[in-house]
Length: 104
Image (cartoon, rainbow, N blue to C red; front, top):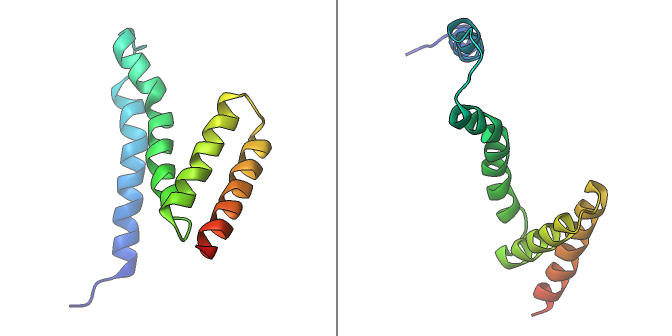
């Protein structure tokens, strides 16, 4: 069975285009439902969280050090620190946790 790579690329391009173009062509009026508007508002945040969280947990040698770094990032973010402070603080916390767990 030989399959053409170009056919796969064409199908993927068509599906990607359809996903982006169909909402623009089918929904022409302004969405007035508060529920649907709030749902659509939070979709990007939920998608980002769903993609990021598994990567956080599996990015280190120990799941416990990843959870400690995630907790540090949450604490820094809730204290309204800048993105660079949150990233550096979480990375430093993971480094320290990995060093401690590596010696045990």
